[in-house]
Each structure stands twice: as C-alpha cells, then as structure tokens.
Image (cartoon, rainbow, N blue to C red; front, side):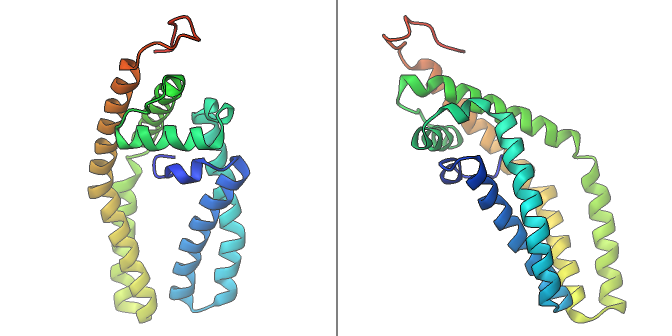
Length: 192
C-alpha cells in the first residue's frame, strides 16, 4: 500500500487489485522469461502470481484504510495524493480521511519493519545464488540472479530512506489537515 500511487486509489477494490496484480505479475513473469526463455512458464507466473498478489494487495489496502471505501473515487485519489505529497487537501470534509489514511500508512510501515529481519537473509541467499549462477549457470540465469541482488540492495538501502521521507510528508499533510478550520456542517467536531 505504501507504493500504490493515488491514481490507483481512484479505482474500486477489484480494479485496484487488478492494477496491482497485473503489475506484479508482469514484473515476475519478465524475470521468468529472461531466466528460462520459456514463455509458457512466464505466462503461468503471470496468470497465477498476478491474481494472488492482486487479491492480497486489495485486501491489505482495504483493511488498512477502511474509510477509503466510503469516499468517492476522485476524493479518495485526492486524499492519497495530498497525504503522500505532504500537502493540504484543501477541503475540510476530507481532513478526517487524510488523518485516517496517514495512520494507515504508519501502521503498514510498522508491519513492514517487523518483517525487516528477513531482508539480510534474503540478501545473503540472493548473493550466494548469483555467484553460483555466474560460475555454474547459463548467462541469462546469472543476469537474472544479479538483477535480484540489485533489487534486494535497493530494498536495503533506498527503500528505508524513501519510506522515511514519505512519512515526513505524511506528517506535514496531517498538520495541514488539522489546521483546516472546522466545518460548519459538523458543528466544529472533527476526528483528530
């Protein structure tokens, strides 16, 4: 959910799952196609992994931010863009949604941190496999193995920095949402 851009949130849960699942399926199918050269295997990965990842992502997104389902698609996308950009949503009626979405991003970040201990293990295994594939495997298998090492290195180095910057922007959006004047239709009450 942390990586899902605002335009994807414009869609309903099924279409969000399809967007995210298709992207993941194509990504992993490309790895299979390059490594094995077997297009049927890549098609199987696309057809199996894509829907599985899409369903998981849509469910996780819905559980993390249940209030998003009550918003109109354009409002939901607007809240996500403003929150992720660290900007004011500019609409007092959407301020509670900004606060809820920001809280969801924080919860998901903490869940990711609890699984972070796996990353050094993944790094060691992927590096060992890349070295082995370079020595004993075909060139395309070595290429894919080193691409995986590069992706794991990005996850270990760039991803934590990017996520912390995102959370800093989220905090600015929360401050801006809290600074909006109370709406005359809610009697001055607002979540916060």
